[in-house]
Length: 389
Image (cartoon, rainbow, N blue to C red; front, side, top):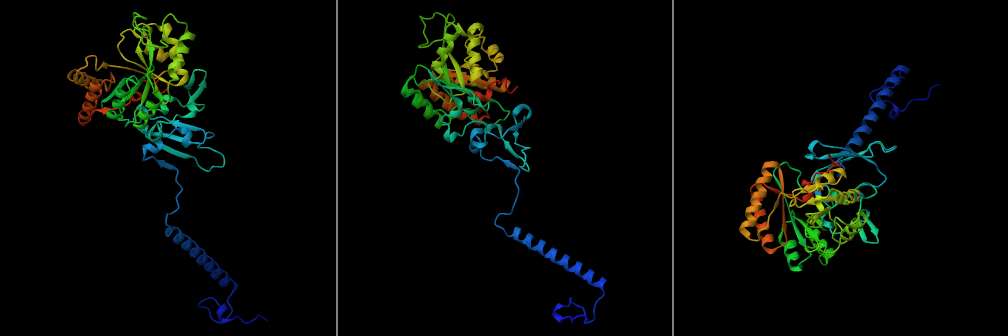
């Protein structure tokens, strides 16, 4: 005998008569569906009411270049491989797939970077990257990191990456005059590249001051001019008659004077730079260490460009010496000439020294040039880099 079914146990809308097995099965399925719907509705409501709805981000769009400018060592674990998808002409953002197929990771992380954000964070730009330093008897030398990063990349100042007319201005001779150096660091816009004379004083201190201001910096290497030693660039000059080993040793002395620079530029060197056999070991050393070479453009038969290409060294060449005549009006004329060159070929390089009149003229000219649509860029932005094609 079947026990009596209490009213509270009866499905809604059913009378006291016993239902057939088929109707019981149908209503049980209906009840199960209703319960499932309630569970889904409750979960949806909980997600909707969260303060921050759950998302599974797979793309990080970089908004602040100062954050992404930090070196890869600061942003990516060293054990994570990466694959870079290049962008034609390097004018748009590059897409870097970080560990896209790591086992057990589910999905990889894609970081979108603007090319102007490559380089070291300007807020810590005065601090050397230890991974880019080789400790030697000559002192700390710049070198490639174990993951392939170069000083040329890490210490480069960010820029927009735009295709408009670009002007790079390099002011050399810093650290020779303490007052002149202070004026150059303080008055020149951060886009101007500063080059330190290896014979200067307190180079490490001035390097930090310049980098804190946002300047990209270079080292000036004394190279043999004609009439050497009557005309003498200074201590540890590289000469044509010296052996390759001697010249590399002297180069090391200059490279060890400070850190955080993207490359070197010649100081004098009319004889040395025209001798391919002398330039070859120098360029080989720069290529090994990941540094660029800037030719000041004063020597017509310089072998620097060919040797730089042969050794994979980023290379740039000066178009105009802006202060051969140290008079404000003449300097401004030369800067206008640099601008015309930039509008004609896309970019141009002006070279000057840290004289008071030069610093004042450059600072005022840049303020006006920007209004005319000229972008002032660091020297690394106009260098031809064999490693990037």
